Amino acid sequence: MPGAAPVSAWITAIEGTEVAGRVALVLALMAAVLHAVFGALQKGRHDPLLARGVIDAFYCLMAMPFALFVVPWPEPHMWPIFAGAFVIHVFYKWSTLAAYRRGAYTVVYPVMRGTGPLFAIIGAYLLFGETFAPLQWLGVAVLLAGLYGLAAYNMAHVTLDRDRLVPALGFALLTGLFVALYTTYDAYGIRATADPFTFLAWFFFIDGLLFPVLAVRFYRRLPDRPPSGPLIARGLFGALVAFASFGSIMLATRLDNVGEAAVLRETSTVFAALIGWLFLGERVGPRRLALMGLIAAGAVIVELGG
Image (cartoon, rainbow, N blue to C red):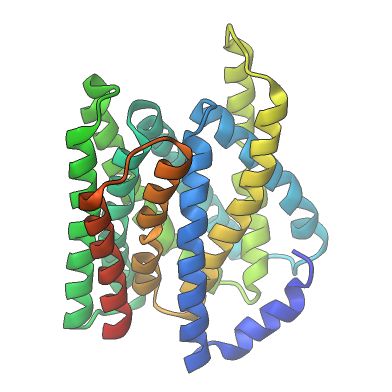
């Protein structure tokens, strides 16, 4: 995180201003694009646990020197917050991997992301006292209609692994609940420390400790182990994407309303469908394009309504 101190000072300086809202909008949309890429990296040619493990290993190693030697040391009250974030993200990753192992990417991803924003809005109200205007609730309804419509359409047309579709959707719904939980909880965490990059550096360092161990154990038990070169390349690229994606959405939640940032991030489903079409060989027809248009329209209504 080179140059973190000047950027951190700038973020702190613009908090509560009109500029903060515009910056948060850009950050949330950037997080949407990057999160779609990150999801595809986990669902690609390697088992999701292997992909997740090597990604976590890289971002843990990258974050460690910044956490220990660059950013300000966390305040004492931050350690229980980091412990809570670690536990929440472990369950989030577990449910995500379970869904990816059982269902097609374009089926489970919209369900994961569609469940998250509604509960994140509720959590933001309970924790931060944030409220949505009536027009923003209309935008949420339009966005959710697009998300769940897209999932239903994909589910009706998927031909692979039909016997595992119901458990895949169950895990996708569970993942959405954890998405809402970590979005709200991590927003609380990044607001609880004076320097936002202290939270980000230590989060990535701590969060990346467990799944590399699980992935190594899984890799050793495989009868036909995949070559390590492509897996390492995927992990390095995925770690950089994770830094940018998670860092963007967390900074957005510090600068602006958590609920609005959560909704805007879920336009990632549009980008996920495009990735599924371009790189994973999954079809995109006029009906899916129309549903993706609903998702984008819902996000625009939420932003304009605010």
